[in-house]
Image 1 (cartoon, chains in turn yellow, red):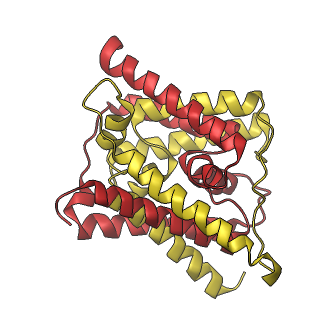
Image 2 (tube, each protein chain N blue to C red; image 1 turned 180 degrees about the vertical axis):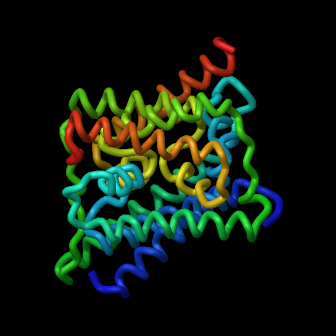
Length: 139
Length: 140
């Protein structure tokens, strides 16, 4: 891969991390505040998702019009809704609710050397390796 | 940007959407964070450099934002560290078994209207809400 392309990947990652931090999603209290529907409910996560889903969905629609320009875009076709998908999503949700971290915010907090992230990320890596060993990495 | 508002949530979300779009065009893949990270942990993965660079950028961009803006730097730990480690294990296992997390399924998949991602997102939202309900209001 050309160095220029890697620089663009770094920019994309930087934008992603900036978005997570600016949106407040790196603060577990805000995430858990959204998930705690019977508490003092915090709608912020809904606004983050609306902005991200809207831009991504619209952007992909526009980009597909340029498919002929040799753009290599991933398929929008759904994979089968099978048992691993359902069980995996359920387990992920339990972990998300327990910690208030999903993978992006956990990695974002690594740079700040927060103890929660320094423990969560290696544990997450172990969980990933286990799942990929037992069920394959091609999901 | 010292005082957090829902505009921060919306603008941050837009940045996440733009970043995901850019990474999609560059990689030709759906750049969900759990998939990008998880495949770095598989020896046979051929395209490791962009994955590593993208995640370094993510951590770096967040660190810079924490330094620049007080509202972004806000961090309120909610759980003891033993719980955080357990949560990490479940998040890692579940995202790789289920084929995505909040970004791959929740942002990209839902954004493209993919039924599997919409299903997965509804499921992890519900189990996360039930978990928070039990943790905050029943168990402890």
